Length: 353
Ligand code: ADP
Ligand code: MG
Image 1 (tube, rainbow, N blue to C red):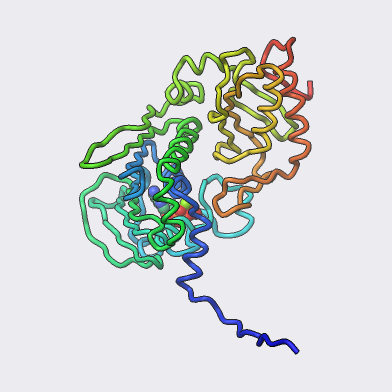
Image 2: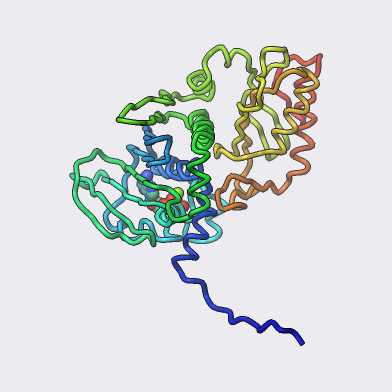
């Protein structure tokens, strides 16, 4: 006979569940800031400032000039699965916003200290809101502020001991990843001014990223990477299938056009920055045939009907699922092969001509 007794099944304490799940939505500094920047973009902001203290370890703040949050939303603002963007499942298919699950603010509450300052066009003063770790509004006061929203998170991961230690240990790496992510938004967001500052020591503030918010991808590339980098690129317009188009820029094939590291590759689906390891691998592989010494710079926006892709695959929404991935990759391989073939003249390839 077995010596082990059958254990009793009990529900996990709600606060603990919240903390565990929050740790999946907010993986690191860059996923935390990403959520806030996306909220600002969803709110129609044309100016977004990201203010870090000690590379984000002490605090980070996202300040926007978007529509603000109206007072009747204050109490539910940071409650889990509360959102102004999605009400029913079918809405997911026509979604035009970055957010839709109502999880970011609630997760950030669970993992750090969250405060919000906000004002809509209907109020003459702004309100400062303080939330507790379960997402409940615990204090409210009036302050002066322009229309828009500021979200501040202090001491991220303070209550996840392992993550907190890793976060502190790897802060420079986390910071680097964040800057690269902000570059992705700076490239794709049209007409949005982005500024990122970092304050260290005794109030030494430095500007680490600044874009003017120009209206085209070309201008954005020039502000983010400079005109000499831009001059190594060629625009691409690939018709991958009758429902999938890729717009963007790729390095020319000659030596000196690529980079020693594959660190300047940015992939988007309908303007949403995402990770595309398979596409990246494919681009690198084909580029290698034309320039064996470098990695290409790649900025590629996949334009697909929202019905044909699912961004709700992982809690951080960085992964996408195409309904037709195999054939998309196959056609892309052919198109890239033509682009980087020695006889190639233009970087626009229509597979259906
Ligand atoms: P989601 O973005 O999925 O809706 P969040 O937790 O990120 O969930 O945000 C909850 C809600 O708070 C949003 O739906 C939006 O109405 C409001 N909100 C959050 N950030 C901002 C902001 N910067 N400006 C205006 N409204 C905001
Ligand atoms: Mg959001």
